Image (cartoon, rainbow, N blue to C red; front, side, top):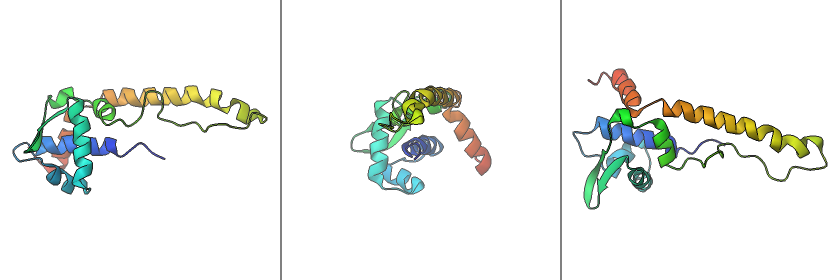
Length: 144
């Protein structure tokens, strides 16, 4: 089990919109880069729009960022695409056996650890911006 790929695809979409800002970033164009169906891209673009990260207009192909790259954190993307609910990144199995000492205590033992791990991960995401991602890709591709 892993975090939904919506997170990575959301970052991919926003990065490509920025790097293609002279062109038209239609769902078909974006889907060709992600290598998925344009309908998947349109759904994610709707989530990104609802969160105020992109602007799209009905009947007009393309999208653009609504904020500066340095003002969009990976945490913003993570929240925009509904990866997980608060304090629910890690699932704990339901109904362990209460007659077993481990079953009786496992949830209360590991839940605080899972919550701490999620908080730590989200802190990292708050400190990385889309600008960092775009700059890294631009450097790797020699794009000025």
